[in-house]
Length: 73
Image (cartoon, rainbow, N blue to C red; front, side):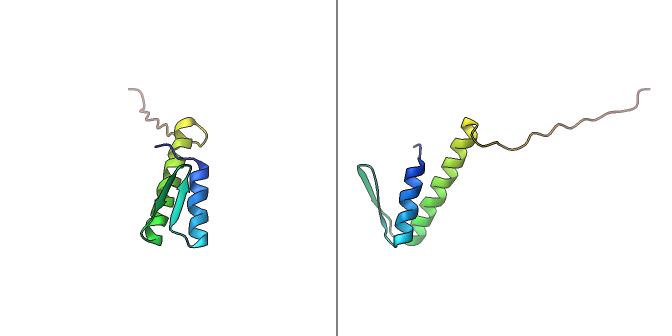
């Protein structure tokens, strides 16, 4: 599932208000605890970051080029 910034905003708003029920368009999710809601926020942030890296909006890990030379004989 591709998450959006609006999904993350909805989760964070629910956490800020102390609510455990979040609506995403036509779907509603009720979390059992604040910890479960925080885990969902971490998951959405991770997915958004991975989407940004995959599309080139966020640079991935830097490339390393290692050169090994020897003295000619």
